[in-house]
Length: 135
Image 1 (cartoon, helix red, strand yellow):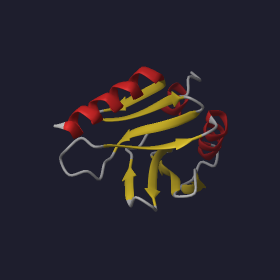
Image 2 (cartoon, rainbow, N blue to C red):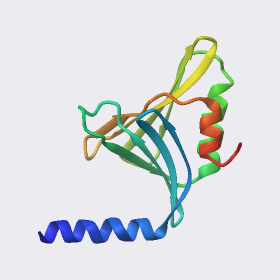
Image 3 (cartoon, helix red, strand yellow):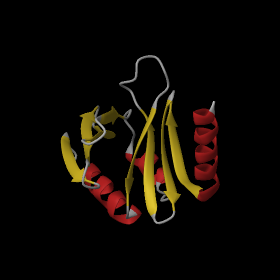
């Protein structure tokens, strides 16, 4: 019971101090960009979860840098990956796949310390631009 109360209070305080920059939804899968203090967070539906809706997240310090990395990946117009290290323990792979003359984007991320990993659904360049508030 004590754990549930602490979790609820922690979750509530996070909601109070966080600002959602944008979100996109693709069927039952979503991707959100949240700003909390001086850090940004991607929160996404993990497609690897078995039947339950599981959200995974990772943090990064500079929204514009990450947006430029993602946006530049769309310009290559071929399937490829961009790998970044967001902190000492977190590796993020931005995966681009070419399907029907369109480039689609998805996130694969792994936290080496906590052994948490996840994969997002595919999103389009327009959805990513809207996520970052760049229509």
